[in-house]
Image 1 (spheres, rainbow over the protein chains, first blue to last red):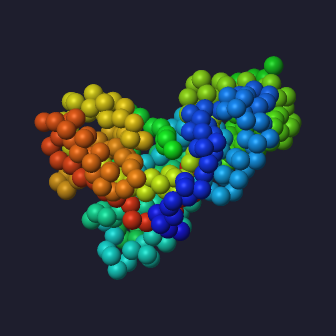
Image 2 (tube, rainbow over the protein chains, first blue to last red; image 1 turned 180 degrees about the horizontal axis):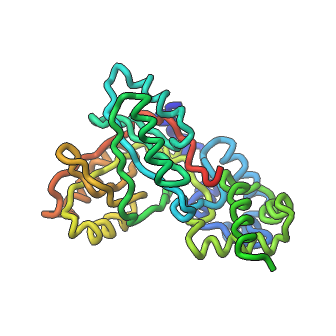
Amino acid sequence: MNELSTTASADALDALDKRIINTLQRSFPVCEHPFAVVAEELGTTENELISRLTRLREDKILTRFGPLYNADRFGGAVSLCAIAVPKDRFDVVAEQVNAFPQVAHNYERDHELNMWFVAATESWQELEETLAAIEAETGLTVRNMPKLHEFYVGLYFEI
Amino acid sequence: MKSDEQLQVLDREIILLTQAGLPLVAEPYQQVAEQLGIETDLLMQRMRIMQEDGRIRRIGAVPNHYRLGYTGNGMSVWDVPDEQVHTLGEMIGGLDYVSHCYHRPRFMPDWPYNLFAMVHGHSRDEVREKAQKIAELLGEHCRARDVLFSSRILKKTGIRIGG
């Protein structure tokens, strides 16, 4: 559950692994033999690339490989929400909040507002209802902070 | 030729089948197309259209940044004047160590922050140094600031569309 303690796995990666990860974070082509195209760019073979990606995914160095969809463009609602949870109730409240399937991510943060989660629903009405249900269940106030504007979203970790 | 409505249904099926990932085989699009009972060309055309209209942000790999040594991940929050938030947000979002940058509502009086930027580094100190650089870039526009570090991941399912 606590992934923050898992580190240093990058040390086990060789130069080709690193180039694969860096290259594939940027893009992946849509064509009949996309791995062959990328393999040629990287100076390796299609088979080698596929087997390395399979290993990187199994080892959880990669959490995902494929299309990243933009939830905003599908009529759904996504919001960042925060709760100030009393320390002695934290784990119980975490369980209550996580039990909602609409909660996609949840992080503990070191602040008075110590629980930060992302809720994603099919509509804004469902989002409001979900947050009201979380408030009823926990007895705590949920601060709803939907984005007003997105300036940038992009994860690129050069390794 | 399919109608717009049929294409919408098809796009939704494509999303459901691929949002967890593409198969790691020589012809991944062909495999997905076969599962859907459509031609590979049609599948690839729909993927390209969704890339062009922004429904697909990108196709590629998402690394587990903790395992790549990026263990310092801080949510930096800033109180800047509303009139400047767009200009400043574009500037901060353009920094290479910022992965997400948003304008969000304040909750006065105790949460004055309206600009959020996720900052990544190899340690918390590195994140603090980068936040200091952001503060310098914001200059007099920065009226209050904080960095919230995550101490625990409580849930990480990811957003699923049309589940």
